Length: 462
Image 1 (cartoon, helix red, strand yellow):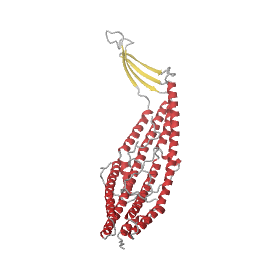
Image 2: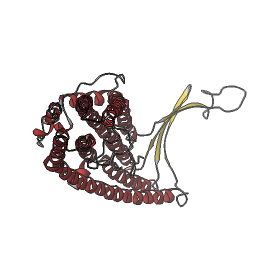
Image 3: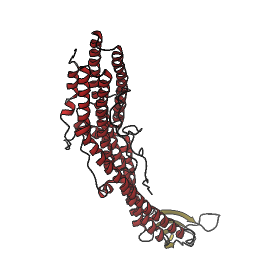
Image 4: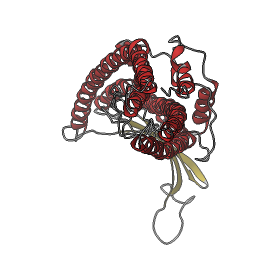
């Protein structure tokens, strides 16, 4: 019986990936990822724009606490129209007057507080941009590692298929194989070539996403040595810990305090403001005159103006208080969802490591041995291979989605969790015998931050 052993070297190529399961302990920081984060946080225009908005609001604080601008009045009073009577008539004079408005005590302090809290709202917006940008870089990097892991798996598959095609050809030439087996092996190689081109395009797209985030040319290369299993082990956070880093919740709470200060200010607006005027009136050769005056504003339309403003801010305060509750509730929901997904994906990952991949490998070895012994058709070995490769691809997808949940949890986003998407491994029969991979979102990996998320209650700013 013809029993060649040319398939076993290909199996050895596959085996090292499973013989030593990656450690689940948190590794040291990835220098490539650290460099990508540093470049993105240093150069991304959205972050610079958010920082400029913070500085802009900071400039409003000293303006809000300053007295209103004084006014200077120049005038002339003259007796008659025939000639200038200054110095001849006692009631003819030049006038120079200075007027300084003074708000009711407490108004300036409240206006300054409103402006200071406005800075906090801007800081929350900048924090959201920063968290979103960092998460986009991490998602884009995980997507790149996923695609490169798929490419490595695809390269191993190609080695086997090429050796299998050579084996089938040899058996066919000696009358122990069929032409159909040879054609099927060649078909699988052709399908794999199409999948290879698709993965190469996916890799270039993932590079373009990361290069845009760090403001590089889309085609700039990014060398990586890590794998998905080397990324930080996803951990859980308590709802309180997530609330502490949530920009939306911080912004909503700051807006409530800002609205409360505005309500206090609206109540004080029912009090009058003052203005002090001091002036001198030169009269030429006659003794000069002087004057001092005090003016008071009269809020006589308070029923339709000031009281309405108080009611307006009271309604606003109630609405902002409800928004805090809404944001907090949604944030707790997202935290619970992501915690459950992390736990489920961890169990799935361990199932792959300790069961599925081992069983899939054993199934492939058994099918291969039966084919070599002439007791099974070539298609059974091919399907077993595709099942094993499919299971390994699903394992990579599990690692990627575990990172997606980990990233979204620490991003504290209110929207749905963005997926880390890779490419397709190829052959139409790839799914044969393979476990179902975690569902992939249609979202592009590393979608733009600063508003690209599925939005929950938005931060409002006065």
